[in-house]
Length: 141
Image (cartoon, rainbow, N blue to C red; front, top):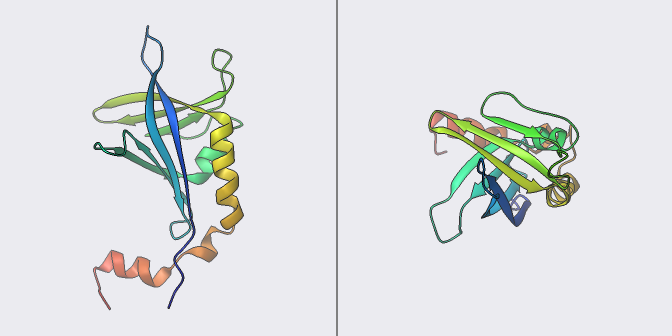
């Protein structure tokens, strides 16, 4: 019997940046599953309502604490002079974009907990290749 893979979850409040208005608070959750060791999930919205989920590289979030990181749909920007204790995550899709500020210390604490389970560079040792191949091929062995 296989052990369930470790999961790290942080419930937090992010701030949606709206031009010419104060940032609007929004409940959110960061989660990490060792079975999917390269990815983190950012779920936006109340737990009882429909959430919007974004999945992106854990390394992108890690790098974004220190310098601008990412291209395409997700960018992570380190603290700015106007919001010194927050990082900014830019989420873009064909429907539009959103600017999300997340407290830097919450992101750092979350990442430190993930690194305790799967250090950076060790992700490949946590992949279940048989499960991934079964998912890709649709097999149910």
